[in-house]
Length: 302
Image (cartoon, rainbow, N blue to C red; front, side, top):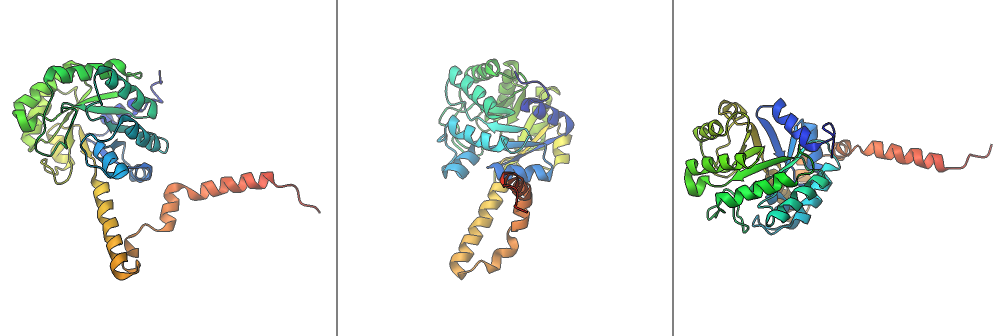
């Protein structure tokens, strides 16, 4: 069992206590994780949509597998100690598969994951047409996840998408049941006002951190940290903000290259070679190569 100092889950829990609300920023690959770490974020997030969109060019409709997600987890956690919260969708199956999900994500280096109460053929949380499993089935998912974790510090977060179909009262009722089943934190998806967050956090209690998903172009307004703090929200998630900006920038570069036949008009928007190398610690790698190479050379003749 990982000790408390080395456990990613312990680091995530410590970050939740140290920063209120804790900003959790989405990263779609290892290099983005390095950039987020340099910017000072204390927690990172791997979105299921990010894996599907960025790694596979697919929509977020449950088309990627546990192995797909774990590969991205490993790539990210190998380059940074900043704790990573991971989108586990519906867990990819029943109790035994959910148990495997938690164990594999822990082994890959994740600090925690969230499971949602949608049916297996899930949809984006800010799209219409979502269907939910029963409260009993979701509590079974939570229980299976909690029972399976090899590190008790690994965070099990329960996400409810019930606000859209069952109203705020229904979503709160479900969240309470998930906490009773052992969920450490609650992901309240697609709430539409600060008053709704106030009611949600009040109902869940001060010991259960509630997350607000501040995804752009969705149902939840882009609240500030001060507003969320006043509503007692403990985690502020920005799942795909950088990804959206990267996509727009890439599209503009491709269009300019195609239309103009040169990148001269967009060079000033690019990260420089020196900036790239600084993030990657390129010189440190080169120095190590030089040391190894020098050590392998025979002494020179006088």
